[in-house]
Amino acid sequence: MTGRHHARRGVLRLLAGSALAAAVALVGAVPVAAPASAADRYEVDVARRADFVPQTTFVQCVGASLQMMINMIEPGRDRSAREQLRLQKLARKLSPPRLDGSIRQGASVRGWVEVLHREVDQPYRLVGADTLNKAVKLAARAIERTGAPVGLLVWRGRHAWVMSGFEATKDLSNGGKVTSVTIYDPLYPFGDDFWGPSPRPGVPISVRALGRQFVPRRTNNSNAFQTTLQQAYPMLSGKYVLVLPYLPYLQYRPVRRPA
Image 1: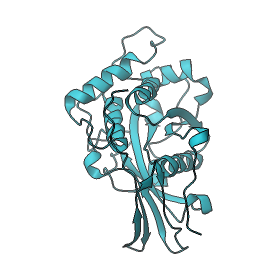
Image 2: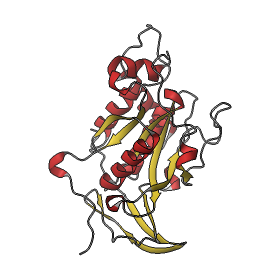
Image 3: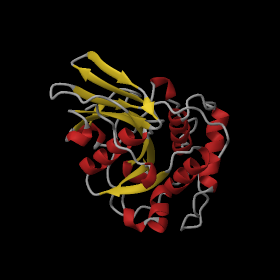
């Protein structure tokens, strides 16, 4: 841990049409809100657009994603290029050796999780989902419960994104369906010729649009992300991979609702 901890910021909003119906803060790390009616739009977002940080090189997507996630969890942390490089180097150091013996230029998803363990109090773990809808639901529920962002392994394992929030038809605990997600792509505005443009930071996109770039990881790819996952996390083979925040069992509290 760094010892530089700040109060966690979490924003949970209930919107009716385009008008703000309610806005509340977190109690501890848990959003608190009244339920929305069937006609309302339920929105949770733990970031501000100012949290966006572009990666300073084409290999530092993990370092930049870490930097954004840390600032979302602990507002006011360092957003400098020097800090991004420090996080990237640490993630690379904590990544296992590549199976082919080559020198790693980027960082692995395992290093991504290990840096979060060192830098923030919020626990994280690697999780794999069988379908896009299951992955989105897992991510949304984790954000709703913890007030912390989720990391997404996109482009079949070649790139890192941060998911900071979502919109749903209603509270997820009451059967709400996620309709859009908010993404921070550290490569914005460049995108990729094959995978498509980067989502605009802080602007919700549909689940369908997310699925064009957030796809299951391959099992026979030699890039850094895939090699690491195949070596250390074989249970994630062919899955949608998330860097997921969670609450330890004794600390778990669901979203409160008024009687």
